[in-house]
Image (cartoon, rainbow, N blue to C red):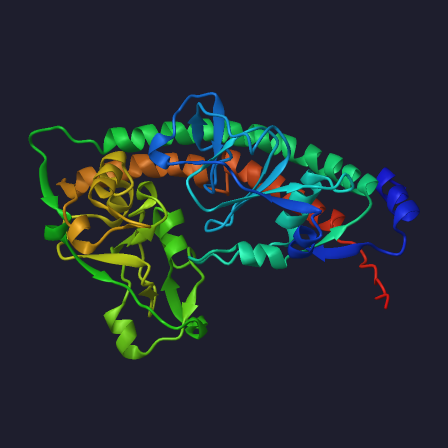
Length: 398
């Protein structure tokens, strides 16, 4: 028998209790940490004394020089209220922007890393634009004896160490990819003509429906689809909505359409874009995004996908965005973006180069991404296997 099996047989042979995150918070086994301040995204730095942790996918989003007394060095579970990213942090940090929920243990019989693994194994992503902490609170996790928790953490940590090394190497490749993206799509040549988005596209708002209409019907491009991907095809999104034929015609999504997120917590995240690179039958788009439909044949869809994610375009979108309690953009504001008009052959050449970089960084069928994906699947298999316990039935005592 393995050490873990011996511990389970000795300490919890009849099963373990399962408790929701909400129960653990009410019992004060877990605590919500309130930061004393939050760093705005335009204040993030490449270097500094204290790491910034936000709800973005990266573990560290930047650096700052001020220490937050409410977040000393400890072990924390961080949850992105909008992004749904779950992170384990074991160092002092400051919170970046809004939307991050910070949890810590308040009981020596709970291992914070175990809680992180258990939440990661049991939380099902919703992938829509709303606050998700209420769903996290509903998640039930096993709470075995601390000795069992510690042994499971030791096993799973061994799986994640190699993956972390591979991801560090991949991150270096992605920085190189981003450099060439901006280098190839920055045009200072006098022979390059520019036209505005307003001259090249027709922009309109998306579909708004009652909540009960979602989850069935026709494909819909949602906020998170656009926020997370440079381009979309039929396999890129899974959202469904019940719509009429008239709504399909009014809010259609076609190959070549460029979509922009319409609203965000911060200016820096406003107007994220994604281009539909193939036709999807009866597809529509959400009211949380704007559709820019080409009215010329001057631009390749993939060229648009790359160009609208460059630093120069991002800066233009941010400059014109409005910000009160939230950041917003509109069709007239996006219409001011200037786009280089290159011969189709030159666009194809640029797309070909960037596609090779994208394949190196993102294709899960080969290279580093494939190896990372294989390690991740192995880790998830064992995580699921190790974190599934027979549930102990606890009798209510009157």
